[in-house]
Length: 374
Length: 92
Picture (cartoon, rainbow over the protein chains, first blue to last red):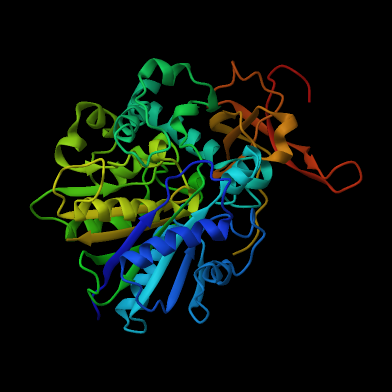
C-alpha cells in the first residue's frame, strides 16, 4: 500500500466562461496544477464531468483534454458520477496510486452548463434520477429535493425559514471567497421573496450552475515542496428509490462513505468539512446523515452557530455561493480544502489540520468521501 | 422477481409544484410532481386535473393515461400514467 500525496492543485474562478472550450478550460486548470507539482510525468488522467457526452457531444474527452497539454501517451480515463463525478475520479485516482500501478496521475473536473439553455441543464441534472420512472415523467432533481424538504418540515415541525438558514450561512462565507461566483451576503427577506423553483424551494435554495474546471496532481511520492496527504477515500452506493427508502430523509450512501472517514479524522485541531449542496435541503440532510447533527436539528444548529464553532464547514461558500460546477464540484471542494490545509486559501486565516470532502450524486445514489491531512 | 400489477387507486404522500422543467415539459409548466402510494408501492408521478391550493397529502388519487410530450409535429408521441384526485360524489 503506497501513500498518496496531493502535490498540485488549481481551480479556475467559476462563472460564465465563454472564452474557453470544455477541453481548453480543463487544460488550463491542469497546466496550473501540473506546473505547481513540478511537471512530473503524468501516467493517467481521470476526467470528471457530468455533461461531456450530453452537452459537448464528446466521447473520449480525456484524450482531447490531453491534447491541450501535449501529452500523447497518458492513459485517458473518463469518470461519471453526477455531481459526485469529481469525488469519484479522485477516489479512483487514489486507488490507482495506492496499488502502485502508477507513480503520478492527474484529475480534472470540468463542466460548462452555461453553454446550454437552463431547461437543458435541468434535464441534465434530472439524468441522476431513474430515466424511465422519474426523469421521463417530468420529475427533476429539484423536484425530489423539494419533496424531501416538504417531508422534512412536516416531520420536524419546521418552517421554510429553517431551510433558508443554509443559503444565509453559505452566502456569508462566499462573500469572503474571491473565487466565489456569488460574493454577497443575503438576508432572510430576499430569500423568502425569491421565486419558487420547486415548492417549497426557492431560487436561493438552488446552487447556481457555473462553468468551471479544477485540477489535481496526485503522486505516491512527496515530489513537491508543499503537499497534502490523501489519507483515505470511500465510495458508497444506494440503489433504492426515494419512495422506497425506510427514511428518505437519511442518506445511506453519504453515511456509509462518510462516517468511517470522520472517525479516522477524529483528533485535535481544526477539521474542515465540505459537503455538496446543489439544494439547501441536500446540504442539511448530509450533515444529519454524517452524524454531525441529530436528525431534525441541522437548521437550528446551523442558525445557532454550532457547526461554525466546532468545524470549518463549507468555508468557500459551498456550491450555493461558490457556484455549482456540476461534475467538477468535488474537485473544486478538494482544491479548496487542500488550500486550507496548506494555509493558501484566500478566505481563511485559520490553521487547518484535517479536511474531509464529501461528494453526493443524485439523491444519495452515490456518496464519496475524501480525507486529507497535512 | 415477478411482475405485479399495481392497483389504479392510491394515496397522495407528498407533492411539489415544479416551475423549472426539462425542455419537453416547458409548455406544461408548472408541473405538479407527487409521490403516490399504490397499496404499498410508492411511485413518483405527475398530478393533473388538481386544484393545487386545495391538494393535500392523504388525498385519494387515481391513475390516468395521458400524453407526456411529443417529438415535434410528426415525431413520436410519448404516453404514460399520471395521477388525478378522485372526485368524491362525482362520476367517473
